[in-house]
Image 1 (cartoon, rainbow, N blue to C red):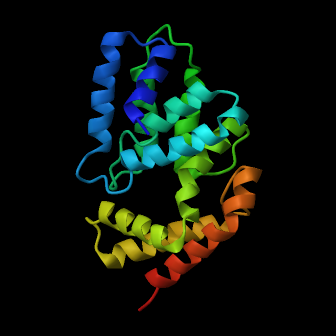
Image 2 (image 1 turned 30 degrees about the horizontal axis):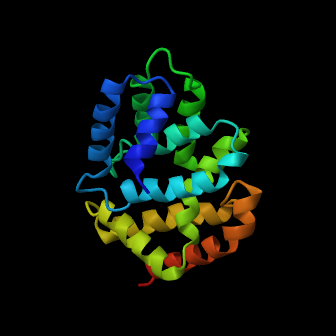
Length: 206
């Protein structure tokens, strides 16, 4: 998949002048390619866009969702709790005044990827599910994912990281559903819960 081509076509369609598109792509590629980006990187964007393209016909605001995918983790620091807010603010700051996009929708969509809870707007539920689809990979791929997450939080020693990660994972299990769309629940809910339970058991081993 050619992310730059998809990105450039999107920006052209929503009102960006040609001379700004290349610079914006450079900035985005640099942000997602940082040395600390072991999981929240261009591969993650690619995976989300694969899902987006598969379900785009069911999305009412495809340009807003695609733009939100590109920018939802633009700012990512494992020591901060406001990454989604900062990413949302940044995404709006680069939009041209004459853009056809719904700015409030984008802001709300990106912020929704922080808590991953059900949204009244179904398009945003699709975005949340695209973001969480990794949880339902086969176990070998899931192991790679949680090892990448651990690397992103390497500044924290195990005695802090393990209970913190376990608490975050248990939060998913406490919700009635992990996935917010019926489609993803039917396809992925069972495997995601199994993977999460297995990781928690590993984290809690003495």
